[in-house]
Picture 1: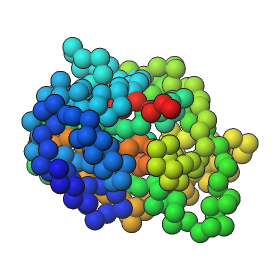
Picture 2: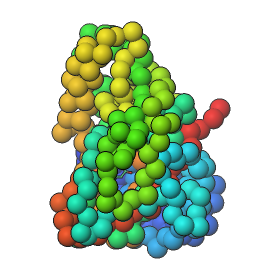
Picture 3: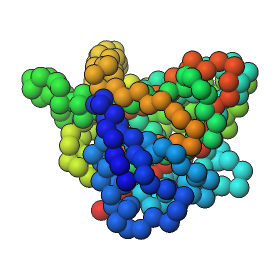
Length: 278
Ligand code: SIN
């Protein structure tokens, strides 16, 4: 297995491994170590089907919860991130986020397998939240450390949210619900549960407030931080290739989708990796 760093703040390309073949413990440990080191891994030249995607997800930590998505037919844990060639809805997941950060136990990671990727456009961007935190002046870190972020899915998945009742004509199987109005707190800055490295966890969008802070002040702070968290120097631009699987660490990076493939179809199969317990 060859791991080639992207040269950006995070991300590496992995070659010389067949993820459709059975993975022994040593290989899984090697993949996990590379994943924790680079936060985003892109495995090139794979010939994986949905069974292989499920096996890989189980090997990395097991299936996480996937609220607000219906799975693809015949599978409980695979969702399709799909956009038809003639679709005109706003892009899915175009804002920076950490997957499902509003859950009590957000997923450790996410896998995306290329089913059909356009020849140009449709890149996925990743922003390294360890780098974003570490680049802050010590005084600013002292002001932010200890703040508690209030997370919610409401802006996206509530019936009046971005993917709610007014979002018509979308091919993805999104299932908005009143449950999206629930809130959950997490530290704004926290140590990665496996590496111990500090970083921002999630961002404005899924973060809807700061505990003990008035909304106007909290939103101003979250807006300012969101700009900082996604600065160019923290970003890795992932360019898709056919037969590619990527896996990222939601505890360490933000991500977002991009467009630029009008008139082309794009489909990826997605699984989430459960939080690690103990
Ligand atoms: C996602 O956030 O799961 C989708 C990312 C993408 O479509 O590039």
